[in-house]
Length: 318
Image (cartoon, rainbow, N blue to C red):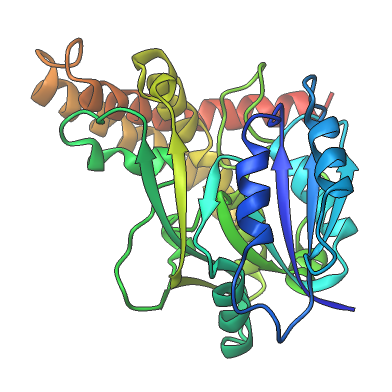
């Protein structure tokens, strides 16, 4: 049995995968444990399969085994489920195809697993590598692009307040996943038909409900490659809205049945207040200030999220 698996969910990642695979092949300090890489092709329409097959054919004998699997159901959540089914190790590290890990990411990930037996999952530092300079005050919304820089000290995340690591670069204990995460997620991940986010937080909340700890490991560094297109207003505002729309569904996961009506009302009222206060403060800037506009979209999405949650419940009963 392997000690560690790196899983890469990808959709049309043929241009991004070669750099990531090359960085993984050159990881350092991995001689004392066994590990493998699995690329999960999430119904790509480009040359993703051909790129992975070429890499397999030209893979060095001393490199970790490289696997290719296909997942037809669209959405990153389904690709992660496929990865967990395929992985032959207790620990599975997930990397998006647009992040580049530090040379020792795998070694640091495995070392943290050995040191924290109570961990169900953990994430590290995700730094932004921008093609162009981001706008002023971008730090206020950088979390929407999965950027996490939480300092040099390991600590536990706060799932009760939805403070969690993004799946762009996190590690999950297979035992904790298989025992607690449903096979059919409520949040499948962003697709052409849906902008709703939260698919990476959902499994962590199920694990937290059963007392698995979610940790932050500052020694795991990756660099999120952010092209110019992801700083365009249309992309960022849609992303921000999607981050808000999932709030109610996520909060309901660990809420008792009798508390849910109260949470529903609380989210409506508290987020309406945030929308009004933000509009009063930035009403003259929302059309020109990208950061303020994204914050407004997030607040509006959070306000609408209880209604979106109610809609999903009604449709699921049909």
